[in-house]
Image 1 (cartoon, rainbow, N blue to C red):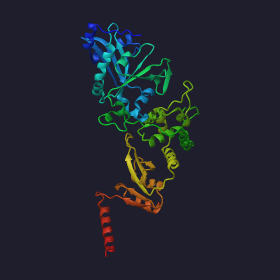
Image 2: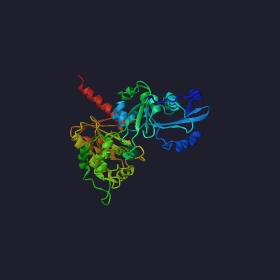
Image 3: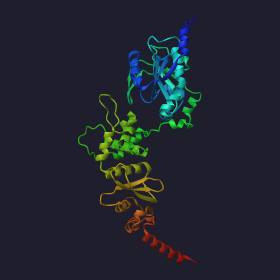
Image 4: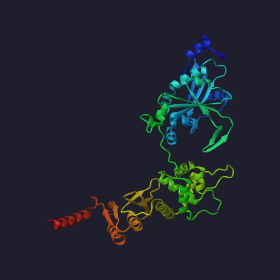
Length: 443
């Protein structure tokens, strides 16, 4: 049975050939949103992330509207079609755009208008995106409600039907609500090698410039989190009462894992790191479930702020060093490096730290109290981490007699000290000593 295909008449064909598409101007935003609110079945014109809005017109009269925004975070059928890994998806999502709104204005339609409007938009979308955000696009996606539409404009424009969604909408991070209205998912590659680029081990220039910075995620398994948490379990809780959502041991375990993963910029980054934890990981940390949602919420920035403010630094360091011993075995450094630094955004707080020269492993640190300096702190730190037969390396600030005596006589370690030109007396004494030794050993 043949389908009745409606062809445009001469006037309608004239309109199709004279269509123009452009980005909306700022002074047109209210009018644009009003049309979406009144005539689009989804109503809201609010978009997320990077976004562009187009108007399709003929002789200055609006006929259609198209809105684009950042691609969906995770779509099983799309991700399978592209073939990228989870790690690639996280950093290459900027190359995917979602056609979130497509509206033919009431009384303005004619045969082939939707497909022609889509064609015009696809011809310039990548260029406009690059102009607005500094990177192009490789894939376009869109959702179609099969109860209302057949997706004809997408099919005619070369889009591929990938499957249906599961009928859930994202309400907030990690939480989804069921709406029992699955949508059809369409996608289209915007250039022949688009999927190959998205799956490449390394994207070529200029595409690699548009990749996101890899987000630090917790890869520690639940059983491992439990094992680490046991080490922190005896930490004294500074809080009163017992009805707390987050255990001290669990928060300290998170801080250790985040620091080892390179997330060490402050409580805001710690909270972001915690947001990606699974329910199983949160449970392993001893965190409590929210009675209303049935889910275990991730700790907020405030939780980490209170912990870091109230827990004694010596206690925290003792537990962290115990964890390193648990994970790496006891430290036996042959080369110990001691250095002092002023911490950023700390209002002048200085730390003297000790590290293993062979592995970079942290061996301990002490704060420099007011009205003193690094030198006496370094001597105390040597006593804590030095072992017989080790070599100590320090900079010129610590080239002191007392430090040398502490190293050799009390700790049994040799030392290698730097001497600079601003230490003329010491330099002259060393020069004389070496010259005399050289003469005594000359043939």
